[in-house]
Image (cartoon, rainbow, N blue to C red; front, side, top):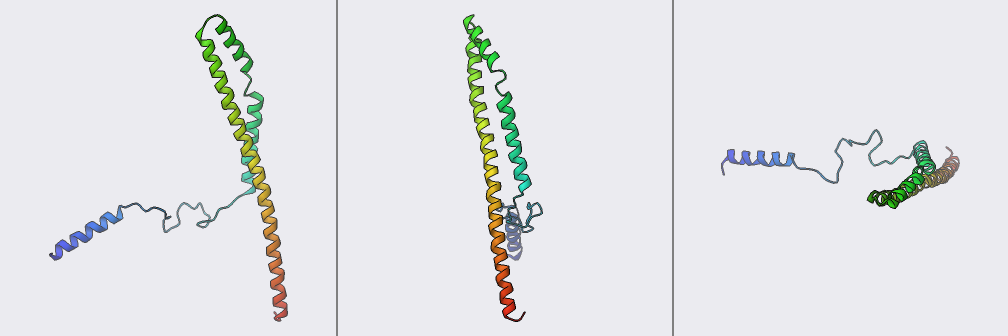
Length: 150
């Protein structure tokens, strides 16, 4: 193999490696962290509260207004069916589907709101527990320093 051929092969391999995709690894610069250290998950109580409140507001609004057209739709469907129009059955079907979707959405909003309330309480409890443990460690450390003459 000639030297030029060897150099050519090395260049080809280097070019192929440069275009390969890396999986299961973040870039060396830690990109995409949004300002937090790599691997750190932060939970802000205000963010959780805001999401929970929005979910509750949506649940409340849907619960109050999601069925506003139910009565008139059922009446129209019944009238159309009575008059022999196929649209009556179709409107009835649409109304049934709407009710199922509305119920699913109401359940999802309630689940989100309740879960975030639960999460806030758990995090508050964890913070209290951790603070207690850390203050105990600080007290213990202080005692060791006092005995050591520090």
